[in-house]
Image (tube, rainbow, N blue to C red; front, side, top):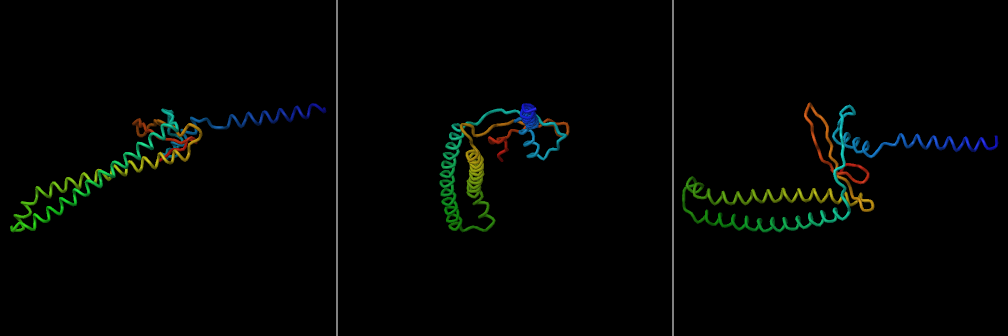
Length: 182
């Protein structure tokens, strides 16, 4: 009896430990559940999740350096284009003031010059939009940097699910804890 009690206690501990391992979800299940939660999908929607790539810390550092350089270059383009727009706007205003025409003729005469100015302003809007894209990319990469563990910064994951008869593929960037970085 003296040996039976310790043996019984050890047996119970091992059986409890095995139950915990069986109830712990796998990495695949964690990723699938994260995608479902992120997309607000119900549990009845079948979702297939595959890890496509691993983002290492070296890769992340390279991406951050490239993004910062792109931000610097695009800001230089924005500054240069802003100066060009200002110069052209003042030139158009001076030219318009120098003309002695009726308002209808003046608008017709100034249309080509104003069109060039509007093209530059459109290019400025495109550059600012591109800058915001780079800012968003930098924000996501910095979020990955905060979550990195060891030499792994995150994972690229491809999720496939069916919505109204159409198969949809979406790529996500996840951190080490399998949380989607948005």
